[in-house]
Image (cartoon, rainbow, N blue to C red; front, side, top):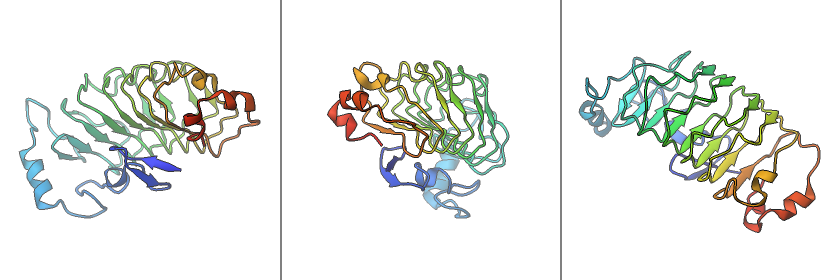
Amino acid sequence: IPMPGVTGMAVPRPRHPCGAMGQNMAPGSIGGRGTPLPPLLLALVLLAPWGSAGGSCPPRCVCASNILSCSQAVLSSVPTPLPRFTAVLDLSHNNVSRLRADWAPGRLAHLHALLLSHNGLSFVSTEAFAHVPHLRHLDLSSNRLRALEENLFSDLTELEVLLLYNNEISSVDRTAFDNLGRLRKLYLGQNRIARFPLELLRDGSRLPQLTLLDLSANRLRSLPVGELQALPAWLRDRLY
């Protein structure tokens, strides 16, 4: 099954769908573990608008232009301060087990990619995404989420890619994906889902832009043949 990157480029599982910007980015390096910053990127860091106007780079993180990488930084909470112009925030491979409503100190209007895979994340507030209205790529894969609660993602009206694979999800509320009119790819593989509300897809009004749905390696007790046949042909071909 193809997995998306931040730019939409497909890479095979089990590699992290965000490539070098994800699991291979270590503090003090870019593009690979232990690799020093190349001269051009170092110049971007030095010339980036970090300062009193936009906020300073948080400790244990690497900041380059509008990209903030705090991957593999042994963090138990989201670092502060978070510069308001941040566009990509990589918090993967840490110990952020809870994402509360106040994880962001203020509105992050420029944030379009949030990476939180491999954190042992078990709780996400239904108000956690109120401050990031323009998010397009959200990676919550490889965590310990057990349920997708009511209206969990309803604030993310511009979301295009949602990765939730390799969690412990067994319950999916039918309103969890409300207001996701731009969602194109939804990855729910490798969970414990016994039933997925396919009625969300039937008439195309709830998730009108969805082109790929991954439900592989779950605990689906039966295949609702009638509901599957009622799906648009273009979606049936991208249902796993």
